[in-house]
Length: 409
Ligand code: HEC
Ligand code: HEC
Image (cartoon, rainbow, N blue to C red; front, side):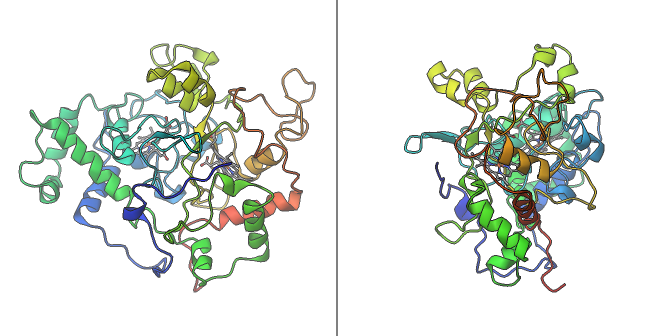
């Protein structure tokens, strides 16, 4: 359908195939990346204290939701304040730095870029979506819940790393007075620097070693890759080839699609007070279209984007602290295994809707209705005709995208 090439930031963050990197090699961070790392892991920067970015983006799960009990059900991670939940599953905070400023690509006729599932951290203010995103969670009452930028700034000023901040940004840069907003921009840019660092984007999966001819993919993984790029059509949205300048693929083209994923009935956002969720159980997540509508775009613009979500990276999609650990997939985390979501891609349009059916067995004889039934992509998925073994091969290939592969073992 479309393929989106290299973006603005690719030049800065891309890792070139020729660069040898071993999983065991220690990564050294620049002072700015180091500052960003401390900010990312500082549990003091919430109200009440106790929640950092890493609380919802754990390295051990590929910088996504680290709480297994949460992943098994609601998939939305609780904020710093007990009982407060957002409406979506945390996507990976890694391999996101190449997403360009949100824009409409007139040639391909698709929206591209921005941060969050719906692109609302557009990047237009800071010319960097990743930095702009980092300004969201601290002040979000459903997340870290810090009352204002001054409070956040003061916490940093009183921290042990205040001197590192001034070392990175200059004397007087940690201004919590009149110029607190400029300080907040520096906080965000430091975090973005860490999120773009080699530590967060190591490109050390078995697939990476295979691309550099330093490891072999198994027969099943090779079959999975061929299906990923061929019959399964996955690479049409999750590109798997090096960029034109030889950069490693991040398995997203940063465009938006409605896959027809059903609601996650366990999403605790449905039960949130009207102040946060006026629609209650009737809440429907309209993704990019909802954002564009709220931002004042015309109906002729937003209508075609209702129900579309940003294509996520597939790097580390299977990364887990232990083999049986449950992760969730999709913007609302309704899928609980890779096999399930691959089966959905394969057979979404093969069965009728479960609603009103006697003895419904999702994935076997029916599927729950899509969360948003307009704009569902029926060209690239839904009835792929994959056999069970082919589905399994795709899953095997996805598992080869986990960082930390050791080619010497
Ligand atoms: C309470 C859980 C929670 C906390 C705390 C949290 N996040 Fe997130 N994060 C999420 C969720 C949920 C989303 C998706 C929200 C959406 O799309 O509306 C998200 C989205 C993101 C994304 C977007 C990735 C993409 O590809 O679009 C990045 C990057 C990110 N978070 C980084 C951070 C940083 C940096 C912090 C700390 C300043 C942080 N998060 C704190 C839950 C959290
Ligand atoms: C038409 C574009 C498109 C195609 C083709 C496509 N995907 Fe996706 N993929 C997406 C989008 C968009 C999402 C997020 C959708 C949502 O959450 O509503 C997604 C989500 C996923 C997720 C969940 C990741 C996460 O972090 O939650 C996995 C896994 C995945 N895709 C794998 C695949 C595989 C395997 C194939 C081929 C069988 C494939 N995709 C084909 C666009 C596509």
